[in-house]
Amino acid sequence: MTTTSSTQRMRTGRITFFVSLAVFAQESTWNLYDAQVPPLLREHIGSAALVGLLMGMDNLLGIFIQPWMGNRSDNTRTSWGRRIPYLVVGMPLAALLFLTIPHVAASLPLLIVVMFSYALVANSFKPIAESLLPDFIPPQRRSRANAVVKIASSLTVMVAALISIFLIDDYPRLSFAIPAVLMVASMVVLAAKVRDNQSSAYQTALDEEREQQDMRVRDTVRDIVKDADRSRLLLIVSILLFGGAWAASRALMTPYGMEVLDMSRGEAGGLTLPSGVAFIVAAYPVARLAERFGRLRVMMVGMTVFAAGMVLGTVVQTPTGAVVGLCVAAAGASSFLVNAVVILWNLAPSDRVVGTYTGLYTVGWVSGGFLGPAAVGGMVDLTGWPLLLLDVAIVAMLAVLVVARVNALQRRFSSGRVL
Image 1 (tube, rainbow, N blue to C red):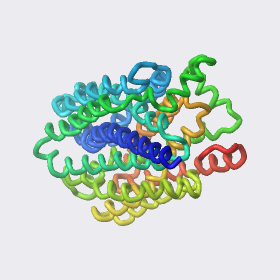
Image 2 (image 1 turned 30 degrees about the horizontal axis):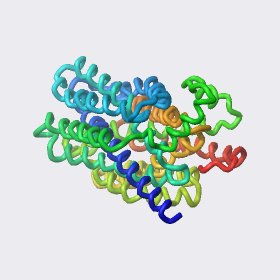
Image 3 (image 1 turned 90 degrees about the horizontal axis):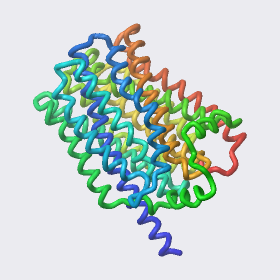
Image 4 (image 1 turned 120 degrees about the vertical axis):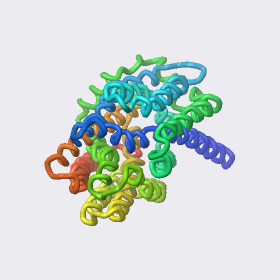
């Protein structure tokens, strides 16, 4: 039994590393995109709301393509498994498109076309990479494994901030090349080392499909909407709301630093660097606390801390105050980013549909990414840039109220699920 347990831990650790590598590569491009594409847009556009809308509009593509691609991967059967083939094709193409962004920045129409093309490709394989984790990891250990994945993701915030500080002002094109190379390198490692046809979820899907037809996306959505237990539906709503708050705090932070704190573009792009450290410090302890005290409860506390960090940054309106507020907020946000998708996976009725559920999670997240920056940008147009962080806090507290409702429903409907 000890040998079996040790082998399982080694297998869990191995797949967690490879999923973390894939997510690290993806998020390296996304974080630099969020930090440095808004200034490129502001060279052509004056309205904060329109900049926020364009920064969110690329995610609109993900609302349609992510659940479909997640479902498509659920039903794919190859010698590489059901996820890896999509990553091998999608990651190099996304890297090439990302590399093109600074080369077309002088033309607004070309910049928008490349932004949307990159978003289309990158969003198409985002849920596929993340679905590798529940394919291999049992429900009771998913928070810990996902914490490691989110730590890898938070490191990319630091990478993007360091690129902004040291390279973006002098070498804008080279700055975009670094994450692109990381993405291609991680694809090579995944292709060489991972065969997800060996995962327990893949084998379960093979067993189940001998007796059942493939689940379509609309069947899964219909099941969620019609369920008397509204937990899954409300959880997706909370993902949208908190995703909107998070996206606004990222997409509009560089202009905020330039407009309110009188910082250069590079300095403002580095405001999020210390918050990446705060996230790393908080993520794994948050996962352990969630497994002990309940994921929903820990999520609510952390989301409230996120809002408090935004308020702190508003009250102390200096570069130091912004950095401290972002650090507090990032530590609190880790509770949501680590646990929300795990709860959704664990609410899935079968391992056959974890890819689809990952897609629905990302639909909620990118819907927030689409609506959040535009909504908060509109609030900024009305109230001014100095109240940006307070506007973000208001959206975050709406998400807290929705999660509180999910928690109440789970006390009524829960039947032994690992939440």
